Length: 241
Image (tube, rainbow, N blue to C red; front, side, top):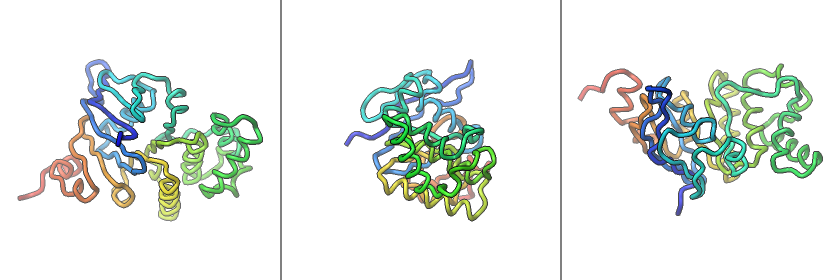
């Protein structure tokens, strides 16, 4: 079976700096794949390459067997890849509902259809009671979920989540984890960047680890958590023999 997403020896340079270097891995349909690594490891840069904000300096990215390297973000979104951002970016002067309606227009033929789709997604993400509020005034946890709702409104097959759990309190964490699990149940594949290790290890089928722009490990959460290179990357020293 062809993987949904194929990252093939991808590098991204900024001048003489290699932010991502020769990274390869696949994401299969229906999986949740965690992308982890210390700050500055190249995770968000790789997301920006996948969804078209940056062109890869070399290497290829394939989605459903089709080469998407270098396509513009709107074309990649239309193909079925949506993303959230580490720093949430709602349309601040618009209501929660209108934020999601704006995204729903990608695959809707009318405002009525877009509104209906947006209301269903707000119900799905637990935001229905907030739909008439201006998004700027929402607490962080709800703004993070609104970011996910906006991405879902484009009807993606692959969802890229960039630190959707950062800064959340314990109650918000539980709510967001439930949303992620429901998204997977809908058949949407997820590639997620997250620093919250307990969360990422509990929801991921596989984990890919970057350090200084290079892939240093890949495997199940259990395999990765025992990998000496991963432990060294996070703790600064290899475990004692």
